[in-house]
Amino acid sequence: MLLILKAKLQPCEEQRRSLLKTMERFNAACNYISKAAFSSKTYNKVKLQRRLYYDIRKKYGLSAQLAIRAISKVVESYKVERNTLHEFDEHGAIVYDQRILSFVGLDKVSLNTVDGRLIIPMLIGAYAKLDERRIKGQADLIYVKGEFYLCIVVDVPEESPITPEGYLGVDLGVVNIATTSDGVRYTGEACDKTRTKYCRLKAGLQSTWTKSAKRRLRIISGRERRFKTSINHKISKEIVQAAKGTKRAIVLEDLTYIRSRTTVRHEQRERYSKWAFDQLRSFIEYKAKIAGVLVELIDGRNTSRQCSECGYIDKSNRHGQVFKCLACGHEENADLNAAKNIRQRAAVNRPIAVCPATGS
Image 1 (tube, rainbow, N blue to C red):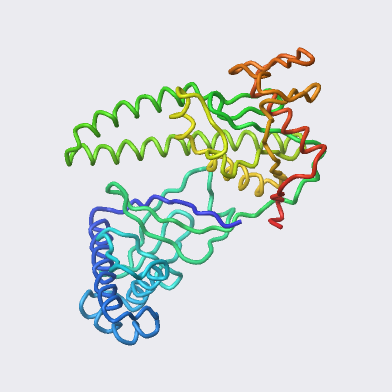
Image 2 (image 1 turned 60 degrees about the horizontal axis):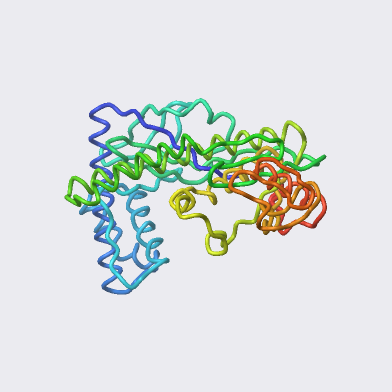
């Protein structure tokens, strides 16, 4: 499986200035190419290269391959939309390929710049070691909050598919972000506190709406987004480990169009609309694929209204976080009851879709 590994570069001050200068010239060249392409309605890479290659090298001092990468970046952007002129940020990403980038061991990278080749130390988290992965294709040099990062595409080996001996049902919810049929609940209490704090801060800044307030809003939004991503990574990792350790397949609800076909109480709307359920599901799927764990999607209709003991379905069975069957009297946590129903449907019915570790 191809994944993106984000490595932090640790340049000295002189190298930092060189990287910044290269990035600014590269994107200035992209704007020059974009204007020429848009005015002549020429979006073919070969034609633009014949017309602009030498001008770019002379005007912006770029190496041969950096000039070609600048043309490629512009052409790729116009594949999506051609009705307006595309402008590139001066600190936009530079796309490096194997001709202008190479790795020196596992902790340094050699990059081509306007000042020649630079060998720069890089830092990779302990969770992602390059010696266990295979680097594929190109890498993007990005500049975020005064720091340089290299986004590397790596080929992560997948484990052999595990033949499941059972199912682990997972219910995604509002009060509890996820609940498994084993009774493990990932509560959203800590998330609610963080979300409430950010909402309060953003509300005050939005009412001000000054330039500094907008800048602060972007910072807060980024923190909130990273917080959600971190929580979803943690939850998905634990769910996949639990399934793999017991040789079970993971069963999820098919949440396609879930926001348009379900309703929640007024006080839960903000929590419901703000949590990244699709991200959590995608994290579970890709981590499961790497681990060789099968993932199945089932129809989630009435899983929260059906009794996991007798199968009786009624809207009045559920009262908030308490499920009590009107037919047999079975009572337990509502999310746990739903997770059990999800597990049982996978065991009895044919799943809607299958995402096996083989990728087929």
